Length: 486
View (cartoon, rainbow, N blue to C red):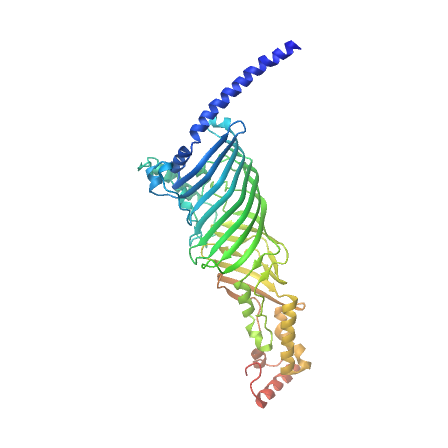
């Protein structure tokens, strides 16, 4: 037994000693690399931004590195001059920038000896992102990741080389297949990002993204973002075989007018799916990123111009008494609605149909519907079936009007002639196409509508219509103008 104990000590002691020496060596390297000033200087030497960093903790035995109060914002004179962090004024977080309250990196620190990093988990808590959407759909954050022209108060010796590399990445980006009707948006490229060889999991908790659209000053806020990317397998050198992740995300989307008070929508969203983050052929962020998105039950829409305009497209039928313009002020999503959405060059498009029930109104958008996030231009083919309540009220009033005009005997046949193109079962139904600016859409029905005047001007096809025309003419000659205005 004593010999066995001695053997354990002889074998174990050198291993423990080697481990202690390794920890000391790695600790020294980590401390030199992870000093806040050194981190800020390194980032500002490579990217066109200003960096602020509150502090760094490194738990070497656990392999965890924690950055506190990390800020990336547009570059200024302090970043150009390489002013020490302690001598800089507090950064003003404006409409373009990234702030992370706590960034925790769970990694194999021994990989630093080989100048590489294997990350078990990357966690960002209280992330805040703010940016503008330019008119072409590109984010104002993009210039932060260009190479800087000045580093440490001197011209960047690597600027031309890095600029060529970035331009090459952009050129390769444009080699990918693209819809010629959409603008080309330059974006990040995997060659420009210091992506670790292995990342197993990315987690973002309680994040907020504030977006302002330059064109109309509309404001979008994604809040309460909880996002996880699991099964991450990204190798910049072999994207064809190592380029996948599984996404799960919950958040709220709040849409406000430029006055920051008028609210258009308050939506609860969920996204999930297996994605390919990068385009293997170009190394850029995947221009055809597709994921399943669910609009949660209880989400609220305070203004939907498409539905408001769609109701007005039935004005031709108001002369016959059909009026669906008196809609609710607040539309509430009655049940979860899911579709797959794609993103390319600032354009969001529906890959699958999207069916949403709002206060009993059923709105269906066909695949291929799209919205440009920069210009707010859109095109949607779909249909809207008004609720039982609205349909019953509208068709009931229309029947009363027709009975008053042509009598009960003819009201049914005339109503069928006028309303059959816009009814399905017992409900008002309108297939439509919507285009132009989404806040002021051009909406038209995809069916031919006939108003009462058209019926009167057309040649009667049967005895009932002959009698109808005679009755209408008799009434017009006998008294004041009726509901048709004739």
